[in-house]
Structures are given as structure tokens and as C-alpha cells.
Image 1: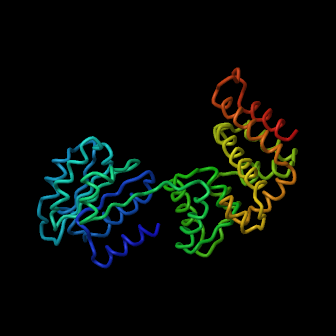
Image 2 (image 1 turned 90 degrees about the horizontal axis):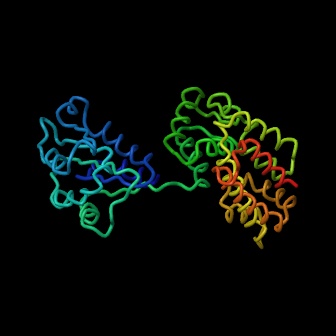
Image 3 (image 1 turned 120 degrees about the horizontal axis):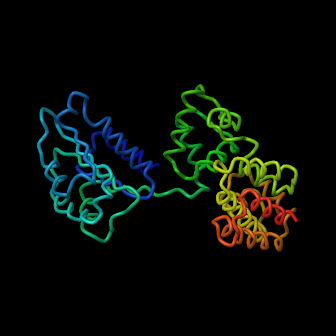
Length: 334
């Protein structure tokens, strides 16, 4: 995020590079930089003749270079944006010839999503000398809740830890999807609001009582009644609560619990740092560790591996996933 802010700040100061090569596994930041350039570099009256959007599947490297070498019309510069440039992965290195001597009045923006160019080869090295190579790296799941908090803070909102965790567990690590939901909340809720689990349930449709976050907590507390209420809800709503996701989240929880048992320093701050969790959730792990000794945790981890395979249809004899999930939870809590 800091790299993105720096690129935008430099553009605003007039430090504009001839080439922006935006690559990597996380498309959210690639789109953010590209859209900023598309919307802000030229005045509206200049865009008609001087701003062009190309798509990788429809053009060749020669087409891109030909357009980039044009001169602007009645403007200081032109902007050429290549979207879905990853479709040109087999020939992308040919762009290095242009990168050695780019047109000074052209800003070429290349969106190369989900892939990276080889940093040992000429294209990367050449662009680094004169332009910007930005790599959007995928966030780990344990980093996304903090990202949500920082994004909302910049928009003058806050969010409760439970609400942030609900978004992560429902939407995963797809920052674009998460940002779309945050934008909806921003339209509905006034500035300064703390976004709560109730807001998430009401406006996004994620149940605040029947979700993987609450299931994990109930399992850690060995609250069988609550666990099976949630599991029955999941069984009745399988499309919104796929078993493979639930098993994966429980596996992560018990793997972290195993790590917790192995910690010598169980100071809350050290636990939060070691497990890479929000300090708000440390007490859940303390409680779960009392209810699940290390030997039991190890057996649960093995059990979750077995049911992960079954949830994908292997050796499950066509047992409905709701029934598989109930069987799994009975064994965990026994």
C-alpha cells in the first residue's frame, strides 16, 4: 500500500515516468494505479485524442509500440494503457527494445496481472532504469483484516475485529471484492461510523451468528449446543457455507493452537505476534488451549486432514457434506 501511495504522490508532484509496468498476483493495486493514471493524468478535453486503452488479447507488442511512439495532439503527453497484458506473456520481452528508448511524451501503462516478468531478463532491468516496475503481492489471510482497518481508517471509518474477520472468512483474500463491499457500506453509513457485525449482516448478508468465525469460537469453548446450531445452518445453506472452506479454517485454527501450546512465552502480546492474529482474539486461543490439550490438538489436525480429502469427494461414498461436517465435529468434540 505504501508503494502505491508513493507512486500516486510522485505523479501528483509531476514526477511522471514514461513506463509503468504493473504486475503480480494481487490485481487490486494494479487496477488502483492504472485507474488513477487513466482518470487523472490528462484533462477531460485531452483524453479523446491522447488516451488509448488496448487489450492484450487483441494486440501485439508491435501494435503497442506503434501507438506508444505517436505524438500527442494539442497536449503535453499521451497515455497508452494496456490491460490484460498477461495475454502477451510469450512475447512480452520484445517490449524491452521500446523500453530502452521510450517516447518521452508517452506514458505507457502495462497491466500484467497474476504473473511476473523475469527479473533477470532485459525488460525488467530496462524499465527499472527509466520507469516503474510495481509488483502487487497477494496478502496472506492473516494480513487482510489489518488491511481492511487501514483502508477504512483512510476513509474515516473504523471496524470491529469481529466484523473484519467476518469479511475475511466470507470473501477470502480477494481485495477487490472486499473493497466493493466496503464501498457499499460507505454509501450507506455516515463517516465516523464503527462498522459492526450487525452492519455486515444487515447490508452484506453474512450471518453474524452462523458463520465460520462463530463456529471456531464455539469449538474452542467446546460449546456443543452452539456448534451444532451453526452446523445445521451450514447444512441447510451449503452454497454459502461450503465444507471445504470450513475445514480449511478449522485446520488453520488448530494448527495455530498447536503452535500456541509450543510457546514458552504466553504473554498476550507475544501470542498475537507469534500466531499473527489480532490481540482481540488471544483469549479465544487461551480458552481453547485449556479445552484441547496438545495431544488432542494433534489428533484433531490429523482428523481435519482426513475430512479435507473427504470433503473433496474422496472415500466419502457420496455422503452429503452436511452429514460429513456433523461427523467431523462429533469427533473433534468427543
